[in-house]
Length: 247
Picture 1 (cartoon, rainbow, N blue to C red):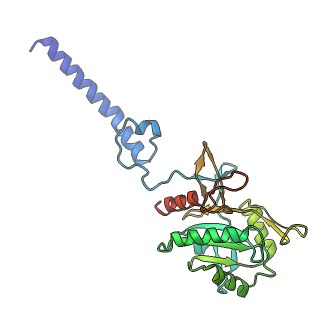
Picture 2 (picture 1 turned 180 degrees about the vertical axis):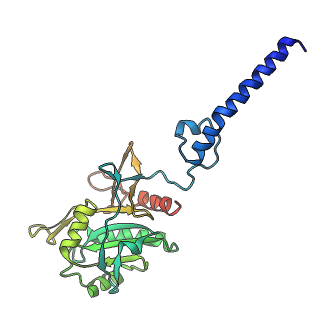
Picture 3 (picture 1 turned 180 degrees about the horizontal axis):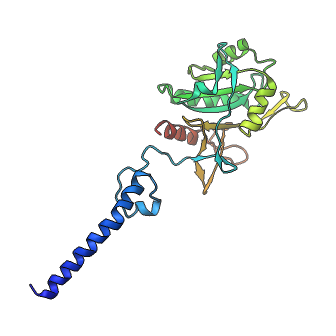
């Protein structure tokens, strides 16, 4: 072997040594802190980084991820239920009223379908808040639950002070709710569902590079699409619930 070849091998060995000293500790540090970005993952074999995290977005307001505010209301069984009862669970939030003649029956039919899809999972729940608590007493809510086939012990139909429920809807979730005598049924409210993760954060999937924020709760999987051409999102919601349950 010539001296020239020997020098080449020595040079290569030196470069490998320098690379190891300078860069490998940085790569290890970045892996341990889950800070490798997508471009890095294409080039560095890191195993299942962030394998427990889904691709669902957080609702961000003023630079902070939005959490469910504190609440405490009475459910259809006469139990006091708060946001703490949902800690560690993935759940769906709706605002409704039992005498609603328009969208509420559709929403709750869809929620029953979702309930049945996750009936074996103790970590899934639903929070339904009545926006007509003067009428929706504990007994009324209990009868409504039986009528719709609500069996999940983590599905609470809640009643309480109207002003507290409206504040929770309009400020806490940014889901419109109002008492309007001129509209059918006397109340207006959003037909959307909010999806909450195990840590109490509002989550949603990203479509066309933007989070959808809420899921349409009115159109059923059977309908597929409404008269305005809007597609159902119940299938999407089921898929995303499963993602959060696996986080």
